[in-house]
Amino acid sequence: MNNIKIVEKSNSVSWEEITEVIHDAYAEREQQNLHFAAFKSTPEENAQKIIDGKCFVALDGTKVVGVVFLRCPSWPYLTNKNGKEKRYCDKNYGTVLNLSVKEKYKSRGIGRKLLEKLIEECNKQKLDSIMIDTSSSLKRLNKFYDSYGFKKIDYISWPTTNYYTAVSYTHLRAHETLSD
Image (cartoon, rainbow, N blue to C red):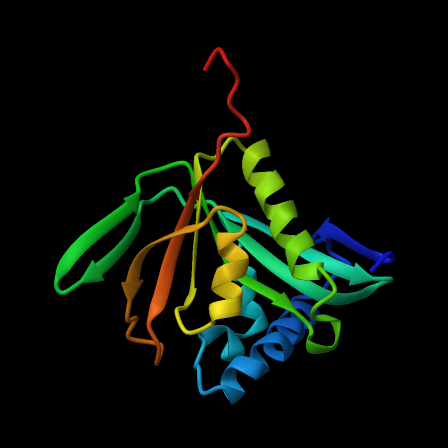
């Protein structure tokens, strides 16, 4: 773990490398019969995910072993449940996407470091909150997010998945001062 660095994606890291990490990390989910869209994502689709955000990578030397995307959309976080629109955040929030660590590097704290880097960036950008969603059946992963203060606020069945998604949210206050 000592030689793992978390950095913002640079031009020296290709979208093909990032996509390979995501596919490797999500292969276990596919074997569990959980069909995440990330498992079939393309390099082009992954590049599009950060048009309004950033990508952070975990490097072992020059080898990409982990990745996470931060999106900072200018539109509300919405879902459509039973024909009704539901709003979670109106503005100034970040969304965590595709927190991924290569299988042989899991359980070394890399996912934790990636999420901490993302939270640090959200505070730097003075975002109010962070949203994340994942399969509700992934108890260990949901407990991991809970340990960072994420609270489940809804469960959704997306048309593109075969599981219920737990939508979680945490409010950021680290950037506030007493004068705010």
